[in-house]
Image (tube, rainbow, N blue to C red):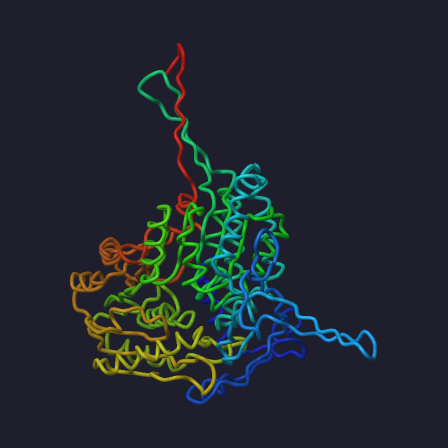
Amino acid sequence: MAMLRAATRLSRAFRTNSIFESHASPLSLSSVTVKRLDLRCLLSTAAEAVAEPIKPDISISLTKLLIDGKFVDAASGGPLSDNFSISLSLADSHVCELERVFRGKTFPTIDPRTEEIIAHVAEGDVEDVNRAVKAARRAFDKGPWPKMTPYERSKILLRFADLIDKHSDELATLESLDSGKTYQQSRYAEIPTMARLFRYYAGWADKIHGLTVPADGPHSVQILHEPIGVAGQIIPWNFPLLMFSWKVGPALACGNTIVLKTAEQTPLSALLAGKLLYEAGLPEGVLNIISGYGHTAGAAISSHMDIDKLAFTGSTEVGKIVSQAAAASNLKPVTLELGGKSPFIIAEDANIDHAVEVAHFALFFNQGQCCCAGSRTFVHESIYDEFLEKAKARALKRVVGDPFQNGVEQGPQVSDEQFDKVLGYIKIGQEEGARLLTGGDRFGQKGYYIKPTIFADVQDGMRISREEIFGPVQAITKYKTLSEVIQRANDTTYGLAAGVFSKNIDTVNTLSRALRVGTVWVNCYDVFDAAIPFGGYKMSGHGREKGIYSLNNYLQVKAVVTSIKDPAWL
C-alpha cells in the first residue's frame, strides 16, 4: 500500500467537511455515524487554542521490557518513590503488615497533546541489554527458529499480519497517543502498511536461495545464504511501527533473532506488536524489546560483543556514534538510515495547483517529522510568485489540532525537545533574512503544536536550507535553469530523497539521473510500497531497507567447495 495514496484518500475525506459523531468511544469506528459539519470553526481557531483533548478509550497495560518471550521489569532500580509500591493489609485489629514490592527503574512517556504523563515504562540499561542478548543468542544457537523450515517461519509472519489487522485500532491508538500523529494516519495508512510489509517478508522467507556455481577444475561449489545471527536494531520515534516492520520483517524472514530498542519518546506500540508476534507463534527469545535511552541501552546494543549485526535509523550525528561503537567492539556490520534535506524541484511546465498540494504533503506530512521530507522547495522563477501565493493559502487551510479529532491534518510535535528545536530554527530563519510568509509560532497554549510555517526567498547558505529541521517548516527558493538547480540540489551533505515535478519527460530523466539521492519521486511523494528499497547516499546512510535489498542486511554468504573425483561433467 502506498502511503501517499492512503494519505490522499484521507485528505479528500477531510475536505468533505464531515466528522465522526457517536455516543461510543471516538475510536470505535464500527459504531459511528457520519454527520456533515462545517470545519470553518476548526480553521478559524488556528491562531487560538486546541480544543479539549479527546481521551482515547484504551488501557495502557504493556510497559515492561520484553525479554525471552516474557514481560519483565528492568534489572536496575530507580529512586525510592519510583521503585516501591506500599500496600497495607490488616491481619487483625492489632497487626498491620507493611509490604514493599520492588520494581525496576522506569521513565515517563509523555502525551504531546497535553504535556502530561501517559505511563511509566521500564527503563532498560546495560544489564537488561545483556539479558536480552543472552536470550537472543540462546534462541539462535539452540532454539527452533533458525532450524525451522522457511515455510514454517513464513506462516508465523502471516499469522502476525492477521493479528495486526485484528488489533489495528489498538495499535493505531497507541501510535498516535505516544507520537502525536493523527489517528487517521496511523489507522488507515501506517498500520495497513505494517501488515503489508510483514506479508511481503513472509513471502520471501522460503525464497531465499543459494547458488551453485561452476569452478575451473573438478570441484562442486555451493554458495549458501545463512542468517547472520543476533541482530541489534534501534528504531526512531517518528514512525515507530513502520520502522519496527522495516527492520524486524526481513530479519525474521532470514531466520535471525533480534534485540530491538525503541525510542524513549515512543515505547508503547512496539510492546504490543511484540506481544502479538509471540501470540502468532514466535519461539521464546527470538524477539526482545528494550525501552530506554540512547546513551545507555542504545550504546550497550551498539557496542555489544555478542551482537552480530546492527541496524539504526535516526540522526546522522547519532549514526556516526553508533558506527564508531560497532567498529570499536566487534566490527559488526551496520545499516544506517539517517537524516536528509531533500530537494523538491518544480519545473516551469508543472501544474501549479497539483504541485502546491504535493509539495505541501512532502513537507508537512507527519508534522514535518520525516527524514525524507521535501524540505527544500525549488520553484522555477517563471511560476515562483504564483506558487508562493498558493502555498501560503494551502498552509493557512491546514487543520492543526488534537490528532484524535477527525479532520485534523497536523498534530503536535513529538516532544518538548523537538518543539523547542523547531521554534529555534524558525527564529534562525527570521534572523538570517528569509521572508516569513505564514506561521512562525506555537499553536495554542498547551501541547507541542506549531503553526504550519513557510519561508520564501531562502538562500542556499542559510541554516534552514542546510540543516535538518524535522518540523512543519517549508523553505522555498527560486531557480532559473536545470543545470543550476541540479548543482544546488546536490550541494548538501545529505542524499536521502528528492521530488521532481514536471510534465516533460526530458526534464524528468535529466533530474532523476543527476540527483545524488537514494529515491526520486516523480510527480508524487512519500510512496513507500513494501517492494521499493529505501536508503540514502552520502551522510544519509548506507544500506537499503524494504524490498529484496533489505534481505542482504541479515544474511551471510558462505562458499562450500567440495572436490569431485572423476566427474562426468564440469
